[in-house]
Image (cartoon, rainbow, N blue to C red; front, side, top):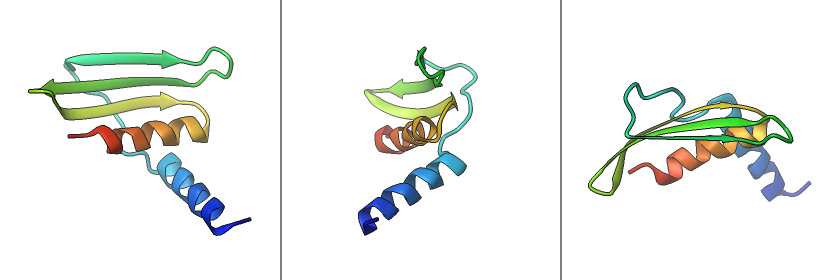
Length: 80
């Protein structure tokens, strides 16, 4: 196993065990739901956008480690 494989695995497990921006916004401006019917993964994205910028962003997710980690990483990438 290469060093880059170890780093990817470590990053995925970190986001899976400690997801960022987890939760729900009570009165979101935008709500998007996604479900993969083949595996059962579910993700709901809540956002508040002002002047073209994401001001608040939360996710609720159920599924495999890859799905949960990718949702967490996405929130860090698009916030602001």
